[in-house]
Length: 106
Length: 162
Image (tube, rainbow over all chains, first blue to last red; front, side, top):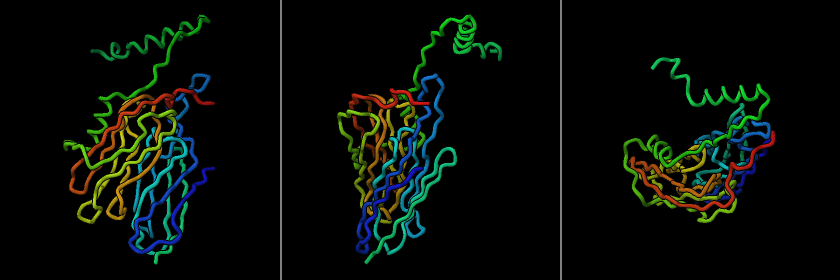
């Protein structure tokens, strides 16, 4: 099972730019490789990533097969209030995974 | 051209020949040619994103090691010079490559809430090639940075386990 690793600062000052790091375990099978028996291995990738801060979308990404296995992302946002940052990955074969982190903003 | 003629392509002839050869118990001498994007398909993929707009160079910085030992995971950072205010911000950043099977790598969408127009991720590179990052600004302009990388061990060379 894909377990996401999230790194969000627990505390931040109002208006501070914070870095958010995410890593999810996923093989990101490209759909261009062949098995030893010669059969094409079907594509199985994460296609979409979305991050919301207290319900408001702050970052979204579309992945293609060229994204390396175990997709890793670092991005930034402005700390605008205490609350929850949620993360959602969706992909082929009905893949869906969510995670969330809490942040306290002074 | 009739439908019958169109169907009789080099591929169908090869498949037919292969089937006949295997029916006769002979090994099938078919080589599999890997799918590969070309500079032209990358240009087409970029056109799909930017439309008719001109792509300026500058403002974008694609930070990618010039020499990559392992193409399976290549870390890169794209940062865009932008104040990220509600009136002037980066809407999206797209990354393209020249020689992987497909030209697209990733598209990220951000807004003035991001504070800093930058992200880091990891990509696969199938060959020594050009990588292009394009930023779409809130005013509709496009800015790009191109980096040429040398890859010693390419991604996508080894086959998977079934």
